[in-house]
Image (cartoon, rainbow, N blue to C red):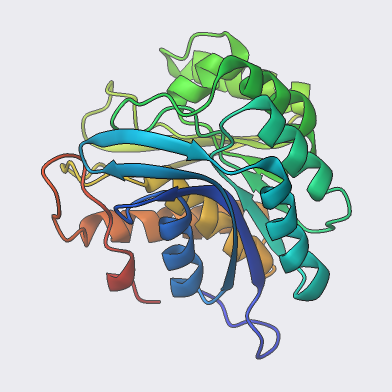
Length: 272
C-alpha cells in the first residue's frame, strides 16, 4: 500500500489536535495512523477531552502559550515534513497555531473539526472564521465533511452539483484544494463518494463501497493524518488521497467493535 521512502528515515509528521481519552479520534488516532503508514509522529495537543464512543463529556483547552511551545519544541529540533491540524476550539487557538507555523515549510493538511461523530460541538463560530482566514489559505489540503463544508461556506450540500459548487467556492476563497468527504451523504446507500476540488475548478472523484457499521469514530482524523503522512513520503496529492482513503476503508473494516456507541477503527490491523 505504501511506496518505499526515498531514504531510511521516516517522514516527520506533526499532528496538532485535541486528545481523545478513549483513543478513537484526535491525537491518539493521528499517532496510530502516522505510525502504521511509516511516519514519525509528533504532537501538539490543543485540548484535553473526556470522551468515549457515546460522546464528549468535558473539554479542557490547553493554554495558547503551551500549544506554541509544543509546536516549537518539535519543529525547532526535529523538523517536520508534513503537518496535520485537527481540533482548534477557539479563535485564540487558531491564531496561536497560525503564528507558530509561520516558519514551517511543509505541506499542511487541515481537517476543520467542528462537530464530533457523537454530535458534540467542538469549534465555535469565531474559530471557524479565524480558521478560514488564517490557516486554510496555507493548506495543501482542506478535508471537510459535508456538514463542515456547509458551515464553512453557507451553501447547501444536498446534491452532487451543490457539493461540487460548495467545495469549489471554499477552494477558490482559500486558494487551497478541498476534499469534500461524502460519508454523511445518505443518497447512495451502497457507496461513499468524495470529491477533490482545486481552486481552478479541476476535480478528482473517489468512491468505495459503504461499510455497514457504527465503528466510524475518528474517520476524519485518520484520513487527514494518513494524507499528511503520505504527502510527507513525497506522494502527489491525488495519490495521497487515494491511498489515505484506502487506509481508512481497511481500518473501518478491521474495527474491533469496542464501546456501545460509534466505535473506534482498527488502525493496528491495517498492513501495507
